[in-house]
Length: 294
Image (cartoon, rainbow, N blue to C red; front, side):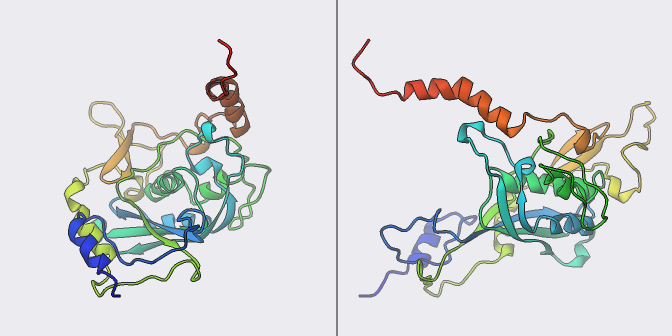
């Protein structure tokens, strides 16, 4: 019995931003989530106003097993206490030719065994801050230094203790893609039907209808200025800094406040306890079995 051409059939029905590359038969107890060995995310962006080399220097600090509580969305409802995750690769690669200049398209490839809630978007937001020039690459190891004072391996200088997450906005979701989930050879046997594979360029082309042209903004990295030497406009007001958040969106500020000087959220233990006492207790009461009393 011949298998149907599943790849061809499904891709004819799917929108251009969704592609099936291969298929596999699986065992009844297979779990796409728990059998996954590692996950590969891609985040697409343009280099407009960004120092990509600085972003890569910051991304290099991500590789290895670290505590990422300051680079994810904390959800007390899940009562998570272990924020250690292992990143296997964090690489920024160009997709468009160098002739595109300041609007060259790049992709951030992030591979890890597992990820926390919105972890990739938070990491990308911090990389944008580094690329814009308002934060140094050392902000990454600083945000991962949650238990005791350590030294930055690149500068040997002591890192600040950051046991609570600073307030900052995560990057936009549109350019983020879960690119691949890897499984053991014993779990899956991928099969194609000759329909071909799709490249990064395919998805970039398919997604262009959703991307607005990048607006003009005031990047530090192109001027050599610092957050404390912003020029004043003729109206007497400071120039506005626009930090990219992905997908043509920007966070605009008249004065940039460094991450480590910002207001901090509750400590994870405190946030979890507050949820257990508040919404958690109400939720548990709702789930209490009916004992027949009124």
